[in-house]
Length: 117
Length: 104
Image (cartoon, one colour):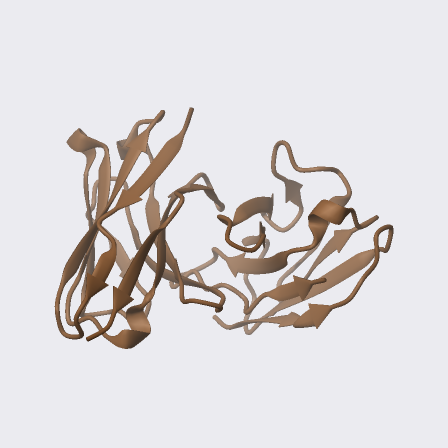
């Protein structure tokens, strides 16, 4: 079955970096656009970034542009997001999601990133 | 593209008909999806392309609209439907979400 599993979350100090991974199984990653979405504690969903099938096109929310970099390794069936210059407002659960044609489905279970000194 | 949802929260009872509205700041054709999220859980896709029911989603959920105004309707609210509902536009990047509607 299609499954997405995020990893790499944790506690990080402001200004530091973190890389999240999303391992895909049950489908061929290179056939799909992929997304990252986050949710701060007690808040709504915020779309973060997307990447095209081959990684040639990348899109970002204004709130992370210039600090986050989305990437993918189709040979490893894995999606990434490199997060630099982290701020307290980046504290959130980060989800990866498969773009199944004008819809995000399924989503991973999420990984929590806490930015705190 | 900004999305607004109304109401932001609503109180309803089992059996009620519930309607949630999502408005886009500019036309997005039918590129709108609806998600349900229960507390502590992963968002679940309900509707995509404004009115297409995702496989496995009960038929009491329906979506309509195009352009800038969209609605999600639950024809007869069930106990498992108490949750927060989000719309998302997939017309153009960034693929923004609405602020959510809490149904309790």
